[in-house]
Length: 566
Image (cartoon, rainbow, N blue to C red):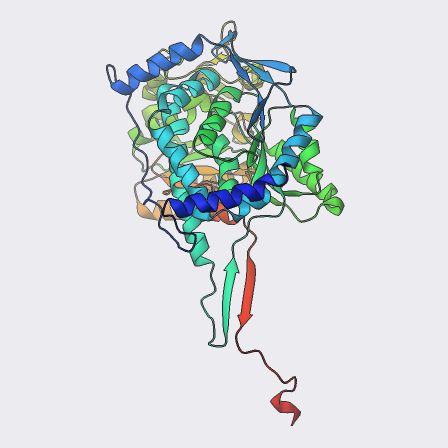
């Protein structure tokens, strides 16, 4: 039987299977009510810690062979790159088989061949796959996925838990319910007695190209799966720095019942994979998280290719950030201190939402500086498999060199003062001590440019300059992802909310600017930070559908003339 026939056969078989299981096609079932997955504590002696320690030991002792996955088959190309632990870069954890032109073409072709089968499958059946994936991740696969994120991306157990477990579980659970809402809510509210108006919520025509980041395993799996949930097929290019965790998540989705060909896993050179996907006439959409520079280039490439594309691709991207904390003289000083420390240094500052610049009144800084420096000095940096470490390593040599370059230039700048950290060492792992730079110039490079590492730049301002500082904060950076205000008096909070209205897509009051939770704070920013299509909400899923309006007339006219012709 030809490969082209298989999708239709599978669709028929699946429909029969659903009917046999009592799942009726002609129904709109309610998926389980989504709730946020509880964050496990990994306390000494806890069962989750024991299981994680066993899995860390197992994965650390093996070298994983990671293939391309095309049409559900593992393809070992022989063009191999090695993956290492960032905190122990002499320790190889995987051999990754990179895709060439033939594999990329095959992945695109396979996705397109799967389109009919997948797009016509009942939405609840598609949702059931990812709901099952969420249960696998919440239960038997939790330690495996968290361990892979820890050794691959140098996350602590807590950072892995909130990312590769809880957030991804939440994405899959909440997206299923958002999907139901879209199918129900997009129906026209009015149908006169002579007709029936309806909307078919179709997926996009073609394939979706998902390009995912290293820093969040949850985002890596959500980008291709959220588009797939709405009936789309795609090609997934994982980050070169997260092949291990991403491959394990691909296998988990397949184990949950994801049909072959719907998502094709393609590790490969960004330039090669990107050029072939962006230039393909059937490109229907791009789901991207990564650097602003790369996203802008992809947008240019799409624009240059428009003449040969069948449709205008949906372009959804979340990119960089220069996220801020602004403190008012009247604020909770201890809360501010904790927010600066956690917001800046958790996961080595490698979060798009990480606090990277802070504007602190002189009276507040003089009161908290010594305590802040003392608390930062307590932070331990090292191998995340040692659970007492608060920070791991930055992701690779390129990142290490970029971050330390900013530190070195700040050390040499007489207008900058290093009050914590400022040291680094890459002899074993890519370790950077949590660094705080006090900048006299509020527009210095470390106050304005994304560093993506454990570096916080602080500008100390005169107490009376609060409103001027808000304007400065708004205009210093090209980004607008996250930010926060610390103040007690509500009038000052409202002043900040208004002045910084377009400065951040996620805005926090008396809290650090990180830690968005699916179903609570949909995530995304605008300006140089992306398209603000809000992952973790129905807004994102809406980008992956192309509705068809259908009007059926029950009593069509039989005369062509109108009354005014008399």
